[in-house]
Image 1 (cartoon, rainbow, N blue to C red):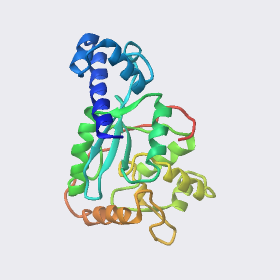
Image 2: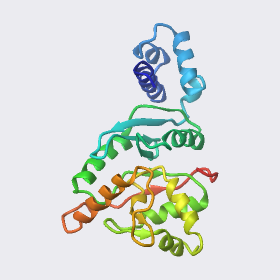
Image 3: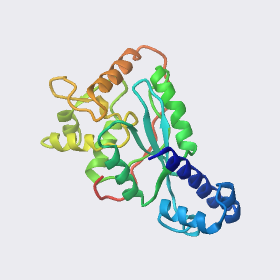
Length: 246
């Protein structure tokens, strides 16, 4: 996305929020920098695939960029919670964005909401070592099996690891270690759903979408803070959504 396209998308995202909050269409048009209703409707239709009026009750996915000690992160959230957190250089990012669009039936546009604001604060606390458990709401639709795996990942304590085989046994699917690994790799909420806490049976790191250097950093960060003070907040997560694969 060019800088011009980014700024246009951000203006349209703000206009959409204004319309949803029962603001006037005239106000949304002119405050977003357009000189005519026709120009605004054309740009809006290209971005969201429909008219402004039809989007008053339709949810969208806001997309923000965060800094971190491991490089920039991109995060997405609906009105219900965070649905995406990924390193910007991950090869799977484009596929994940397309999956988010499909699963939520919504445009993904630059912007922010209360969940992303909270995530920004909690990520800063996590990387500083003062927070061990995230409380920002999560939304992660997927197949029944994928959600079972992701729920099990959320149950791995801070500072600990599990093998793919141990996760499979915990799920009552002792022979499904490879399927667990595939579901682990399809996780769209890096760090929040801690797939970095899964290692090979022999204790080696195994794979990680963000790269092994980052995986080692996250594990070292958590282990180094095990004896220090930390937040006692509990993650709240929602797995509602379509049951088609992510």
